[in-house]
Length: 246
Image (cartoon, rainbow, N blue to C red; front, side, top):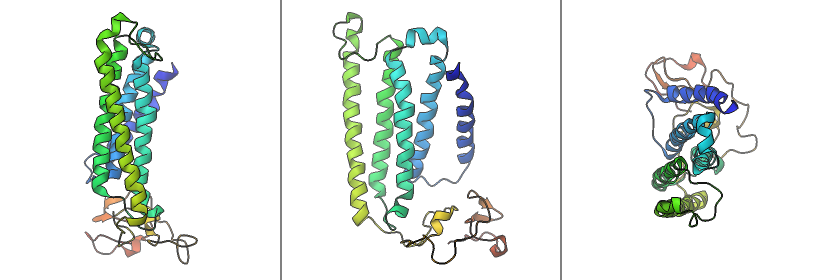
């Protein structure tokens, strides 16, 4: 029952996310890709939870690889994508204007994204055929002898996806000291307040008084402006079709 009920707020959030990016002028940075990848994995993994909430289907699927795939594609992979999106997004704010290498970021995303589905979609299939979880080996089950190659394939992809994460680790620590520095406070044209701080903020983040907030952080393409930072008052918005840069 609760498995089905959780689908209601989850669906509301999914439509919220899709509606937010619908027909938007999106800049597909590595941070954006990981955010969109999170939505993709959350949807595909969450939909399989509806199957497990139906008792007629949960009886044959319970304690199989289907449960493993459903749980980990949502809680492990989707959750990890959200954290990676945040790291790519706020990295310049964390390390005095240094940026992660975008080329390595794109490689990191696409190999991880494709690998995620190559791991967990076959697991859903194994679960639907009745392959149980929590078994070290299935060699004593003659029924499942035909799935040995598929299990090996999943294991190889897991190893490859893990190695790709080492690429991110290298990118992360190298960029802390040698990453390209941003030259303006708000290089990505974001509205939110953290991008109004100096590139290398000191104590208290802002020199002098804390900025006044005039609006929420999502006023894009409004009143002829591409974006309007939160600290810019309406009285300063004089000319139309002019981008305001903090």
